[in-house]
Image (cartoon, rainbow, N blue to C red; front, side, top):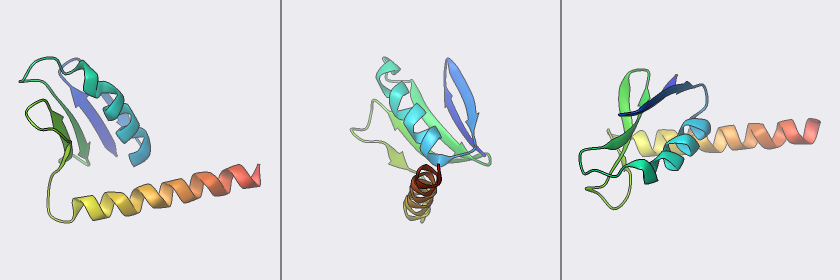
Amino acid sequence: MFKVVTPRYSQEFERWTDALETATSLMPQCKKWTEDVRIYLLGELVWVYSRSHKYPMYIGAGIYDRLAQLYLQETLEAEAAKEDS
């Protein structure tokens, strides 16, 4: 579903939160101006970090809101799973 890509790394994830955590951990590895960290959702670029921008960018209309809702949903599901165990 989600795919995190850098010049030296590529991995797929089912959950947005896992992809975001991995991409955030890879940000310090971007040493050159031409390197970036990208997250794709079903082949569509939705998030990118590069040294040319101070903060990561969400790509596309409504993507930030959609991913924020997904993040909240996944967090609530994780909390519910912890309570059930």
